[in-house]
Image (tube, rainbow, N blue to C red; front, side, top):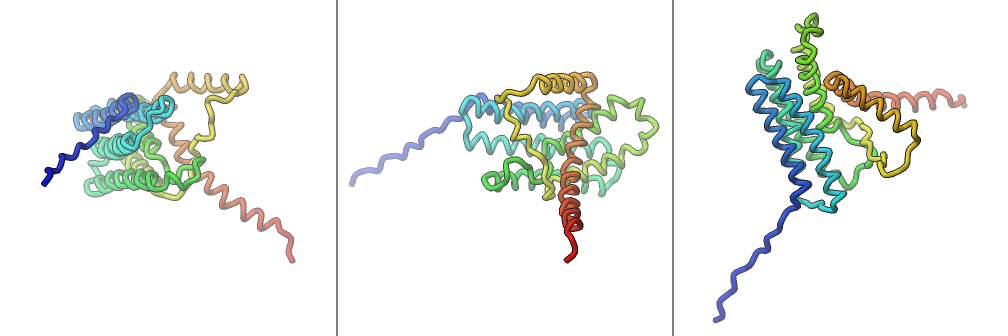
Amino acid sequence: MQAKRPINFRRQGIYLLPNLFTLAALFAGFYAIVQAMNKNFDQAAVAIFIAMVLDGLDGRVARLTHTQSEFGAQFDSLSDMVSFGVAPALVAYEWMLRDFGKLGWITAFIYCAGAAMRLARFNANIEVVDKRWFQGLPSPAAAAMVAGLVWISHEYAEELTPISGALPYLALIFTLFAGLTMVSNVRFWSFKELHMRKTVPFFALLITTLILLVIVAKPPLMLFCVFIGYGISGYVYWLYRWIKPQKADSALPDA
């Protein structure tokens, strides 16, 4: 009887360049958790924003270099869970939510669970959803809202002294709002209709330059305002869509 040959499993490699960006984003999220445990909340908040930048680069690098892979997609999703799910929840809890006791850790868990479900829904519906819109607040934007509040509270500690007593309640509200909005059906513009390779008027380049200069002048405040505006924009659009049909119905003549 002929002996069976051992099965040779083919080793499948991974693309290094895009996954290095994902790994760096994962490290930034882990670093944010460590700094929150060490009470360095401003550094933790900055690390979350760095993770956002790296997360935005890995997919673009993969597409530009034609190195997309299923491994990269799954790795990116798990990295997002750490950087934009676990890290912001723990940072918020260690920063202000701990003082609320049970309510504090429940709020932090709601945010963490919301991020997990948001990422799972995105992965499950990636082939069927309208690419122009996100269903629910994207987890990086939710993380930016929470981290932005932490960052400006330390950057502008003296200016915010009159309302320092309200910061714990703001942290509670922001964390809960971000967590619930991630799993809502509210639509947020995905910006995927913007094509960087197309020509734009010179005026558009000038406006972009001015926006970048404003952000660079006061990064914590400007980034916080940008993401707060984005977090509200979905509800504004929802309200607009809800009011518009009513106006159309009221404009119809009576029979």
